[in-house]
Image (cartoon, rainbow, N blue to C red; front, side, top):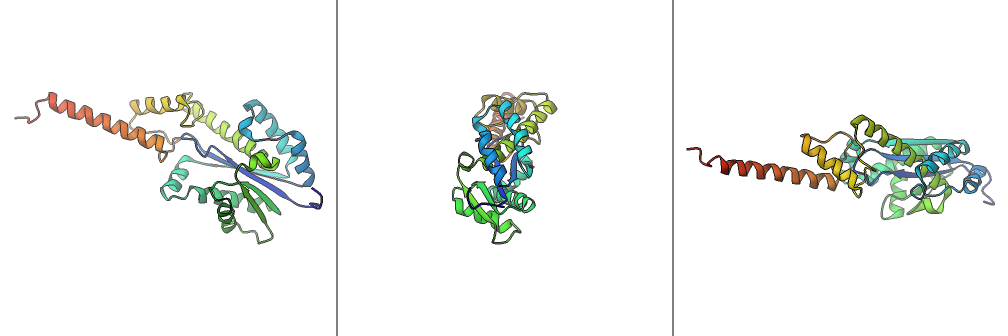
Length: 237
């Protein structure tokens, strides 16, 4: 940290990008040099490697250390619109740029949401109102390299978990993590489709898991209709 005196350092990350249920959370925190060192001392690391209880505990400590923090929840409908325009990466970059504009750091460390790290950094810069003096470092797995990004990851994950819990209480159903890889999530979607004509607003309808499920549902209905027609005598004469 030698030579960093007076720098304002931001870390940004998201949680829930791959989920099929619930919002995506994007978080940013701002620290000074002392706060940066304190995050290292706390042992802040990638939120996925921590238990929910430990994330909650660390979130409180992170907010105490940070000069400022922001968490933005992007609802499923907005994510679906971005996917329809093939612009999910741009949406994430735009939200991160908005957070950076508010935090006003000298350097921002970001977990890259694009396969090309430099392109993601350019997306953020193009949406950001801060001048060329702002340094943007966008890297894959930045949460594993920089405690300030890991801290943002924890805040994003905690807020998304809270949002998911609120959805479960509203629906009166435990659908698990909300990820397509979770059997409980898939079972919930299948059971919901069997009982209702449409999916709830908390579901990302542009996700392949949901699109394939709806195709199977329509196919099953057509099969039933065709079978009913055969049993009914066909011509009607």
